[in-house]
Image: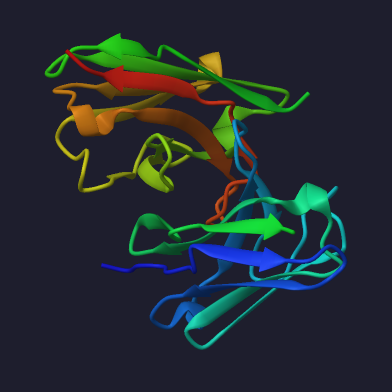
Amino acid sequence: SFELTQPPSVSVSPGQTASIICSGDNLGDKSASWYQQKPGQSPVLVIYQDTKRPSGIPERFSGSNSGNTATLTISGTQAVDEADYYCQAWDSNNYVFGTGTKVTVL
Amino acid sequence: QVQLVESGGGLVKPGGSLRLSCEASGFILSDYYMSWIRQAPGKGLEWVSYISTSGSPIYYADSVKGRFTISRDNAKNSLYLQMNSLRAEDTAVYYCARDLGSGYYSIWGQGTLVTVSS
């Protein structure tokens, strides 16, 4: 079955760039999305269709997808960006979520 | 205001049943594919089930197939999840979420907690 793998954690200093990798077989042939989840809250869509940002999501969030890897990049990371991030793709009648990455802003 | 509100969670014994509801407001539910997604305590997101705009097709994760049933009532702007033969490993916060058909979830509910324990 199709699986998406993410690093468990990423640490970043305020103002720096955080990159979160999502790996899956031929993921670049599918459409990747990313969700942000803060403690005790529901997930929020931050990137869809590989590179698009929903209304209200800051420009510092960007995405890419090629080959076996999708990447979420947070430029100029702020303390409010500290959260869990999940990638997601649709494959064979299943919505598949990544394992999740905890982003810590030190 | 566009929102989804889940209800029906609670404490149930192993082998028991529970029915979750998800009421949509601020948009027309029939325009959207709908899903249930769950998150066990301290764990990641797990997709549970999907139902298309008209009610067919329907898909389930292998972990719930044969035990859970998803349904919708577009006239009531509501989505449901009937959960039977519940197990301890079904303990989780259950979210409903909408998809316009592009394979991603634009809106999530606040979630309802299901605890399966004796």
